[in-house]
Image 1: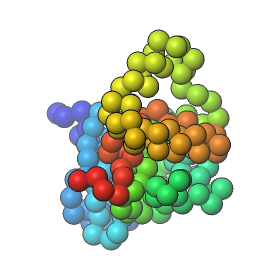
Image 2: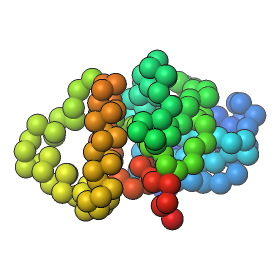
Image 3: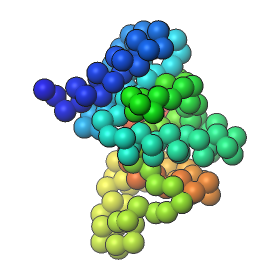
Image 4: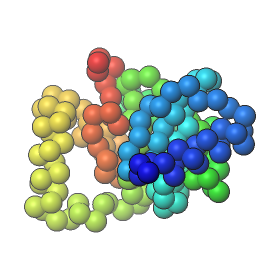
Length: 166
């Protein structure tokens, strides 16, 4: 059984419960699955309640502050959540965007951020992934999120996309 099977089952129950239909799988990984819907939205089902609660808390924090974009990067809006199924529906966004907040931290840096060696390795990896020019933009986006008490950890292309990404 693939490790995301549990999340897929949660997403299917969510679809049945709210009478929505998914049209495509947008992504799947160890932590969960994201499905594109017939409506202009997506459903994300997580395998672990802790990740679900963290991600929903980030979306709610941003909503409280009226944040829909960060430095020109769109952020999906929560449409509905289901605490029992650890699943939520969010609005569809086109690049440029920032998404996937399950690995984020609220009001505190990731524990590894204080370790110079670990942080240095993380930083070098991110700079290589994005390239120097884009990394400076991404670093600004991360700084803006921190002003809202949101510390992003799962920073990578795909979670942060630019308008001209293929």
